[in-house]
Image (cartoon, rainbow, N blue to C red; front, side, top):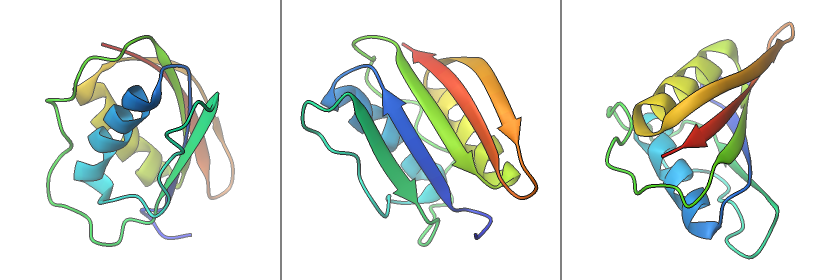
Amino acid sequence: MSDTQLTVTLSGGDADDARAVVGALEGTFGPPQERPSYTDATVRIATFDGEGQSSGAGRTDTRPLSEPVTVTVQGTPEAVRRASDALSRSFTARDEGAAAGDQEQERQLLLES
């Protein structure tokens, strides 16, 4: 796994909320390798491989979320830290817990506008 590979799982909110969360991460990780489904899914997944990363620090001009969204970010500790920082700049983020393995980390955040 590269230092920038990240998997993002979103639950809650609607398709526009998923777009806003993914957009907030694109400034740090570049466009996602896999975009979440924008249909009426209950859980959406996006993956970022970090290729073509932007030098930006993440968007802070994202639209308000329609409701709280639970986001789980999984990847290397550095990727998880960068994702958490980017989401905290764009939304009100409450840390809901983390789990660490040998080479991967997982963090759950509750995002609100």
